Image 1 (tube, rainbow, N blue to C red):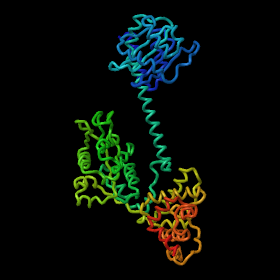
Image 2 (tube, rainbow, N blue to C red):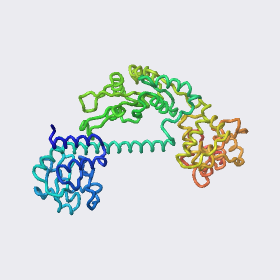
Image 3 (tube, helix red, strand yellow):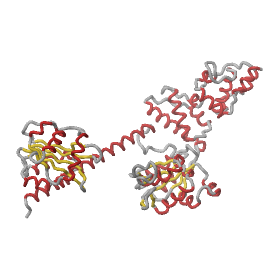
Length: 523
């Protein structure tokens, strides 16, 4: 047969297990406590373990005049006094300790000094986690205080559950904000949009993606810079059993050699100068998901050895730790380097190559999938317009022809950059493609001198030439017209409507010497 105290203890635990949010549990908690003492108001305070107290939950007796509960963060000046409560083993009432009553008055307002109160420290492993403040119609007796202290454990559980729920909601909100920020930067509506060219130039690639995605096999993506290796890696992840787990990308070429181990595997506090706290590495953070190691060919030999162990055994060891940590991660690697050649030269481990290249996927360059250029262009134009909040400019057949004629050394990434620049230059009204590629398209003036005309090397029929040839000829015409001057109010950059540094970079890329035009003008 249960005693009334045991029934109340069980009732509190039952309520603590029903709900995580304190806003839902405060009335039934107060009802149970009201069986012990004539309760009028109940407040539960939570400490974040660093420097902040907050009111997690409040309840007031409704028939009386309703009080506005305290809001927000508690004044930090009382933290020292509250922290001293860790040794207290009984509830503190206004009849026992006026100093602590003054503290609670500081928490809730000076008018609480005149009321009968009970303060219950709520601790876990001798650490103060919370406080229950009870305001009653009459003073608390010794017997009532003893029963209340026996009910501290379920009250503490209620606070801890609420804190965990708050942390989860905060992390979820932060993750959603990061997702929306990423989508905004990418100009996409979701992370799982269809891959442009999946039924065209990437058809064979996507067939291999669909083959390997459901398996646990490692994947090595080979392709030139800007070909879309991360897009394919994400496609493998989204089609795998790990699609609900994280997808994290690490650019191995951007990791300082002295920090590679710390970044990939984590470190313990004090393991090196500046290690002020323990840190999880990329492998741990990607647990249950996929870790995309981009530019894996840039890893130094020492890091290659440690990566090989992870791939073989699924075990990492943090910097400064003697303990192994088991990780559950699928690794997808990518590089633009010729890894087989690096293996022959001895700069890349042969055993690591075999581990990474279980299932290689080779990406074609943009020049090898020109049939996808139009669809890619429409995608990038729409994405750029959405990011900038402007109308989507039309893509003309002439634009498509010019795009297909251009040699894309930067592949899909360069195409995206050029089209975004074209949308900006056209203010969303039209696509200023030729300016985006380096020069405007007005007809050049008549050549001033025969030798300047020869230097310009103009083309008679632009339709028969590549877009780069047309741009080269036009820049030469302009240099001839400005007598080789690049900058200044009458220079070629001003006439072309581009930044001086942009034009100089274009001249270097095209191999044009502006001084040659200056010399010819003096002849």
